[in-house]
Image 1 (cartoon, rainbow, N blue to C red):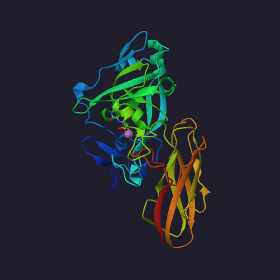
Image 2 (cartoon, rainbow, N blue to C red; image 1 turned 180 degrees about the vertical axis):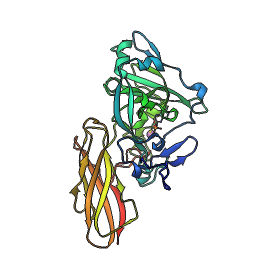
Image 3 (cartoon, rainbow, N blue to C red; image 1 turned 90 degrees about the vertical axis):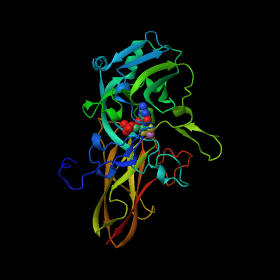
Image 4 (spheres, rainbow, N blue to C red; image 1 turned 45 degrees about the vertical axis):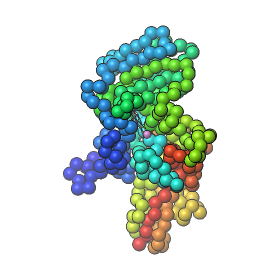
Length: 351
Ligand SMILES: Nc1nc2c(c(=O)[nH]1)N[C@H]1C(S)=C(S)[C@@H](COP(=O)(O)O)O[C@H]1N2
Ligand SMILES: [Mo]
């Protein structure tokens, strides 16, 4: 990554749609704990807000004793916390579902990992005097559709008060970039990234279930095509992994080949990644590299494979987390195509 400039084939994000701008991280190039900002995936429901609309202040109101209004400088004066957190779009790997589903056609790159610095939301809620009757906290942003629907999501009070749920104002050591939510962005470790609201302008404590579109219609698992029966909200990230090397349809040499990638989960940590090179008949543990000081960060893994004969092979990776969750061969289909975490596969030819 460091020699990126000056290289002929330097990585760049893959554009999935232009307006709103949706781009994938070139995940096979990600070798660091921190994804450089220029390679981070971007997911927007609406056109970017105009500069004039960028919120100058953040309001905290609703079921609190003392509503707060803070500007960027104010926030900098609060005790902060820095966390390495992956953001994964709930629609990541959606193109792997069969039958195919509507929505942004994400392949494997709607994930990136940043070093986020900000103020625990719990500190703000404490200062404001959150009332005990509050059950949810609503986060409203300024970006909106032409008909005036703006992006808003809620969290249950317990998750809002988690000490690692932060109002971020820096990413990778610099002020939050505009496209990632400047000046204020919620970061909710462990949850799919729809929860991490960008361009935050208002935080409101309420005592009933929030009914916004992105809460009750979108970001819901619908198990059936034709009815809404059995629907459940999208919340924590499922255990997942990708193979970065080799890539699909690569030609590799007979002998020892390094297989590598990373694995992540929204609950607990990654405890095992297994590799199969014989279509899932036998599985072998990969070596894991995690950073204990960054409990939310993904785990890099690698495995040395001795390719003994020529031919075509399918390589698979399967991660397991400390909650005992393992990637399935085929995840349960859902109408909007969220949470795809099937065992990752690449096909290679050995020559
Ligand atoms: N205000 C606002 N916040 C938002 C969104 C949005 O469209 N508007 N998209 C959400 C979704 S679905 C994802 S996956 C992440 C993407 O964050 P990124 O663009 O910084 O990678 O932001 C979340 N926060
Ligand atoms: Mo998303």
